[in-house]
Structures are given as C-alpha cells and as structure tokens.
Image (tube, rainbow, N blue to C red; front, side, top):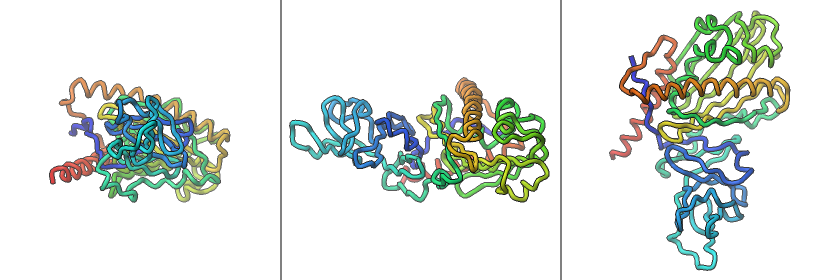
Length: 352
C-alpha cells in the first residue's frame, strides 16, 4: 500500500517555464513553483524571469513591454534588466534600492528553464538534455502546453504506468486494452528518477499509429520512458511491422518512430503546466504523419487531463485514504522515491 499523496513542491530545481517561441509575442505571466513571474526577452535577445511585481506600486510587470534594456513597467515606465535592477527611472535619478527579484534562467534546445530556489545552488549541469529539439534534419517538433488542475506528480504517475492507454486512449494512441495489460515491462531506478522499456509484440496498432504510419497489419511496438526528477519525462517510442526486426533494431528505416518530451512544471501544489513536444522521425514540420500524430497526442493528453483532474478532486476530498501500487507500478514507485529524495535533501539544507 502507498499513500501516493499530492507531493510538496521542490524549489531547488530547474523547471521549464516556457517554450522559446512563446516569448516572440511579448512578456508572459506565469506561476512557477508558487512564484509569480514575468518571463520576457529584452532587446539584446536574452531571456529573463523576474518577480511579476514592480517595486514602485506592485503592478504586474507582465502588463508592461520588453525594451532594449529589459522590461518596462506599464504603469510609470520604470525599466528593469534581467538581473532585476532598475536601469531607467523616468524623470528621476537611478536609485540602487529600486529592484525586483530575479530568477536564474537558461535557454537551450528551444526551452526556457527557470531555477526557483536558492540562486547559489543553481547548477546548469542539472538541466535535462534533450538534443533532439535542435536536430531539425531528423526531428521537427510540434510544441504544446495545457494547464491542468492537479498535483504535478499525478502526471508523472500517469506517464510511468501505461496500462491506462487501452482504456483512456482507445480511439487515439492507446490500442487494445488486453494487449496493453500483458505488455512486457522492464523497469529500473536511475540516479535521478526511473526508466522503463515496454514491448507489445505482434499487437494491434491504435488509430493514431495507423493514420501516421500507414500500418495494414499487426506491429511490434515499444515505449521507452525515463523520468528525471522533479518534472521531466523523456519518451522514445514507435512501431515496426510485426516480425520485421524492429525489436533487434529500433532505429531501422521505416515504421513509425517518434520522440516526445513531457514536462510537469508545478504552478502550485494543486496545479501544473503540462509542456509537451512531439516529432515523428524524418518528417517535415508540416508532414502529414508529423501533423496527424501531434494532433492525436493533443487529443490524448486532454483525455489524460480529464482523469488526472478527477483524481485530484477525489484525493483532495479525503487525502488520508491510501492508494494501491500494482505490479505494473514499479516505475511509479521508483519515481516517487526520486522525488522524495529531492524533498528530503531540500529539507536537510533548509535545516542547516
């Protein structure tokens, strides 16, 4: 038995706060791990994240606009650079006491990562590496984001146990429920989370796979998922025609091979931002398979949203009632162990 409760926030961590292209239309107001931020790109092209509150009259800086030196408050025109310092105080001299909190930001691989905890502990080597976002000759990604009213770890649990696919996603990415229930599974604990590889040999391709991969018969299908605490899941998956050597060489030509990045960035303990990207190998951005598969994923993730938010509602009504772990939940258990390790480390540091 396990509580599988809503998890407290981990603040000494890097979270995806936005996709890079989201800043093209101006500043973004977003709550990340309990912090209200404005995320923007100043005139020099650098991404930055500040407390979304001007130090003058507490107006949200996200109501302002990016300028050459930073972001200009829309109320009285004060400008703050990426470090949070006021660099323009219209009609008055600069005052070094005028400043707002700044958050460490790293932009790479089409993602804006923000550190929400102690700035001195912000280690860029801990940012999840996903080079496929930059390999445009082979992978052309579509990007999406949903707001989900639930604890962020409920999404991680959902991704680390795929037996729900045949029930929740029967008409999209799921497939036959019975085949999902007996899939081969190898799960392991990793240094920063959990990983599993799952095989469904000679299985029925789901509707989304048929549409994107033009399959006419059974397939050998795999899914490799890695959870990196606190909020990232990396997915490499696909199918080849059954009996054509796909298990021996998943990278062989043909079939339907795809990669996804999933990110559950907590807004607070009861809400999270679900960032997701997907690409079908070898497809142009507007390629038919790429487009069909992304749209199928968007529909499937809304199906997940329905169930995850229902789970949150039920758990909130009575948090004391325990939830069970089944045999299929090995990777779920390993993932919860990883987040507990991060939580314990953060509490120990705070107590010093």
